[in-house]
Amino acid sequence: MGEGRSNQPTIFLIEEDDETRRPLVSNLRAQGYRVVVAVDEEDALDRVRGVAADLMLVNLVGKTADEVLAIGRRVRAHAGYDGRTPLVVMPEKYGKELEDTEVNVKGDDWVFYLGEEPDRLRGLLARLTA
Image (cartoon, rainbow, N blue to C red; front, side, top):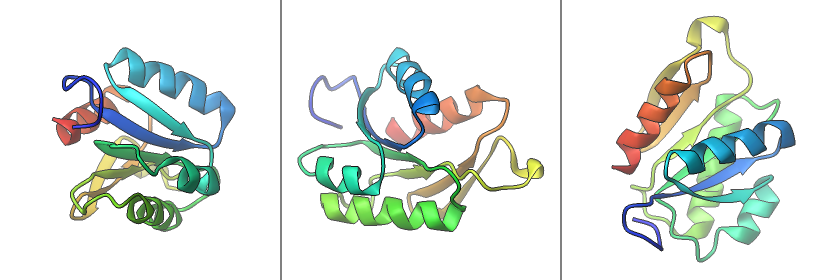
């Protein structure tokens, strides 16, 4: 569990789009998460040291799943998190057939393809931070 109250998991969020970041942070906090925010990879590398995150959530504009996974893995390694700290990435580039699906790509690395069903993302985050 992250630092702070034991019943409040911490999500380290990397989200560069202001219009997406604000409602995403608000929704995550309303779901009971403590949220630490970075706006890009450089900011994340500066902020992540000393943050005991239960999960990393990365959503970057204009990037493929592989690109976002690589960034998330670099930040997670820089933080010194063990390999069991879940990484969930939400790529921007994907086909409509993938919307609202989740893929476990390796160990605790997940790709979530956001669509019209926000409960699907909530369910994945709840499972991974339980």
